[in-house]
Image 1 (cartoon, rainbow, N blue to C red):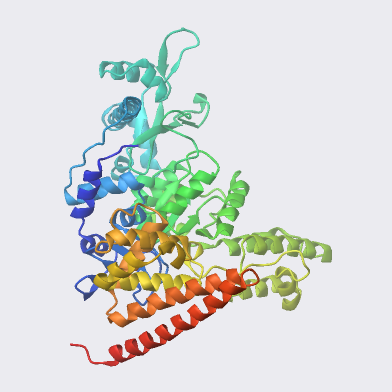
Image 2 (cartoon, rainbow, N blue to C red; image 1 turned 135 degrees about the horizontal axis):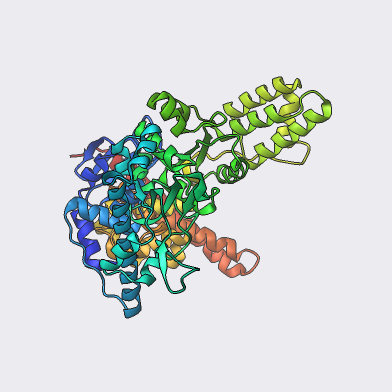
Amino acid sequence: MARYTDESLRAVKDAVDMVDLVGTRTFLRRVNPDSYTGLCPFHDERTPSFSIKPSEKVYFCFGCQASGDAIHFAQETEGLDFIGAVEFLADRYGVTLEPAAEAPGDAERRRRRERLYALLDRTCAYFERVLWESSEGAAARKYLAGRGLEEAILREFRVGYAPSGWARVVDGSRRSGFTEDELLAADIVQRSAERPGSVYARFRRRIMFPLCDRRGRVLGFGGRAMAESQGAKYLNSRDGERYHKGRHLFGTHLARSHAARSGAVVLCEGYTDVIAAHQAGVRNCVGLMGTALTEEQVGELGRLAPTVVLALDADGAGFGAMLKAAERVAASRRIEVRVAALPPDSDPADALEQQGPEAVRSLLGESVPFVRFRVERILAAGDRESGEGRDRVLEQLREVFGALKLGPGAMREELEREIASSLSVSEKLVEQLLAGRDGVVASAPESAVRGGGTPALAVGERTERAFLELCIALPERGRELLAELDIDSVFGSPLARAAAAHLRTHLEAPAAEAGDGALAALLAELAVRAAALAPVPAELEVERRQLELARVERAIAGARGVDAARLSALVREREAVKRELATWLDRALEDTAAPRD
């Protein structure tokens, strides 16, 4: 992975206009000189709960707890990794990135990667020229047009054609300075069994679909045969230095921004299905690269959008395995899974060819929640005539409800009514069995927050965070208090403790140099919350005493039954802190009630 100097990263962060960047995703309203609010781009809401602090270039949503800095915002909304987000922002705001110094081994590996990327890109461009400019590509052009695929969308996906010649790719690459070792590493050629020591083109007489990473760099190819005599209908690049089967999804680089904006990503099986969907206007569509759905691809889907729509042939050979993988995803609560089950022997490319773009949009738009799809399939396939058959169906349904943790709600009630009607049993029986009241399966409540939710904070941690917010909002006194506090004893939460230590030296710019993790997210949240405050100094003193009271309570709990003398001293200390707290509370109430200038 490329690395850039710290100065380059700082230059990117300094150059970002946070209002401009976030304003591309949601309308922002100015609250005060350093606070803007709007509808959250990460979850559906009607009342704005999303805020940014332009001076700190951080954001926080009070609804779904999404938070971070400008780079993290670009990662989430554009579907990029850290380096990709840095490069995206550098391009947008005109910053030149300087590579960091590298160890000799790292530099050599980076040069190797760059050469392989260049070779794969050159080969892809060659296949494109053959498809669109040569007489040999005419049959492939005719086939693709017959599928209803237009030249513009095919060019966008860089679709090409590998000619029949055994050596044309090899000779051209060698003339461009690439070695045989590099050609083999990119899986563009393979060794000849008949002529030891020689190599020949691996892909011949095939329509070529470049397989790219999320930044659009070519990693390998999927080649569709033009004749039955060629053997396998599809031939994909083998696992190697750049391409790893099951790690990537087809079309991610073209779909990621659309998926981020819509909050959903559509998953199809075939390359032409994905291209057909994009041509029909379903631009948030990606595809499998000739594999069953893997855990790595599940993670990639989750990074693209919080909702995944499976648009797969319900009678296809791999659909059962796909359902199991999807069930694990749905059960994890990281992303919502929906299913657009296609009719037998139908796919988006067929629909585009036979009925046009509207048919594709209709096919992909008729999705249902994954749990409903599973229930309907089990009911349709089960024996509903005999008592034993209905019991077996109920057992299957109970497993589904338990695995997916479908908690109480309108969806569950509706499904329970449908199950009772379909099986001719009472709703009460269905409710009892699916709820696991016989001790077999117990349903867990559904998370209320997208992405698994954020657990409610304990009272002590809420107090610690409130104190830190006020330190940021009132930096002069906040700096004094942070300097005099014994952070290790006063803060019970390790994360709040780390934030307090960081703020001792970064109070004016809380999110600066915070890295990229839980600490950075908390500091972004604190900065945004503080920007929305208009506190009086007495409020900070109240929270300071609340912190002290929590510390003493923890000490009392530890001294009980162990050290009577210390316990007695701590109880007296607690009473003294409570008196101070009461005094500052009165002062805070008086100050907040008084008219402000």
